[in-house]
Length: 408
Image (cartoon, rainbow, N blue to C red; front, side, top):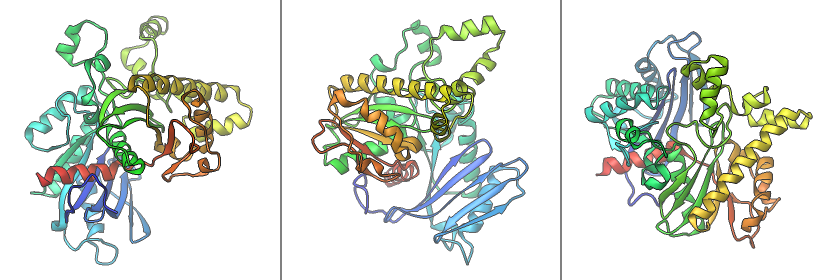
């Protein structure tokens, strides 16, 4: 069924690319009915053991590759797409547009945009704010320009949806000159996911998207919350970078900024070492000293590991804190959404989250909560706040945004 985000049916095949430093994730959509023609991943590009996964026609194919660049990975992918036996298109000319996930658009982009030299320059400008992702995202765009000459590329920014926040939410209470000189402010991330589930929830609950009030919880190895009112972001938990907010797999989430200077002084750590510690060695992994994966944390709790229990309670505490704050900022909410790997699949974790929402009039329907990875209401019919499991689909959202831009 075609999403209501579309104003009309468009006969267009869209390739969606999510390019990492050593990986390239891809999905080819037929936007006439939003079906997935093929999808897959090339990982360890430029490293030993490069491998490609290709899924089409209900089958999965894997093969080792000997490649060094993303452009070479694209050529291997397109060879599979057009293969007479396992391909899904006869010619690359059938692909009408390419949509790219780009992490950071700074203050330059509040909407997806057609890529040109000025857009690429802006993506490059924000390398400093997205040092791991933006260079790789730009590399994917340039590889597609080389492999698909003449086909439009569209950049869809993780930060764009959050550009509707007001200064009371995005400003930091530090000297204004740093905002004016370096654009230091809250940007927020997972915007493509939050925008997608907001729209789907409005459709599901028959709410007016111009009036709905929804709290979106994208919970996974990286987690963020977003308070959306009438299609505009009131606040979100991530900040200048994806480090802020909730307790995550390897990220600390919110900490007193003085922790940074204290540890630098006491441990003699450099700024780079502090950055690595907070982003890659903290969160579930740092506190449990066991794993960054919620599944492992829950198993460790079952085994009686007190450190795992401690970090799990920290996760719930911080999450409850944010939900309560966003409920008040919105002036009440129509629904709370659970998406992402944890939100969609960990029904045990949802039990504990919804239990904490009792003061907001949300009661868990335990039988309904047994669902995993599919859209379902998990609160009781008499609940004042509706809780919904809402699977995200960032790739489809990128394809939909790409269609909109190309239609213009």
